[in-house]
View: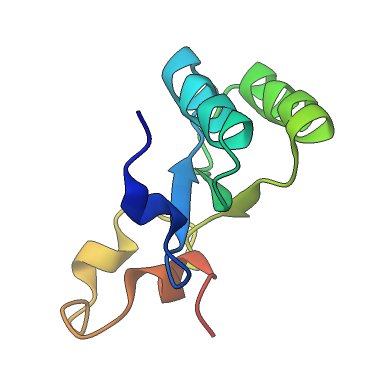
Length: 97
């Protein structure tokens, strides 16, 4: 059920966590099958407080969640950036240095 490429030495498996059942199922599947991963949540700044509480709960039981936000605080900053084509989008999310 797990693609063999997920186990490759140089592979970084990113699981996007939304707080919903599907991302939770994907996360649990990775854990149960020994897949190395990074769990990531994209915080738009417009999340319901219960979503954030649930993420804290998940994190306390399943492991770290990298929470990324826009540096500018606006959802569409990257789209307005003239150099967006050349930039790593995760730079704007605070992942790349």
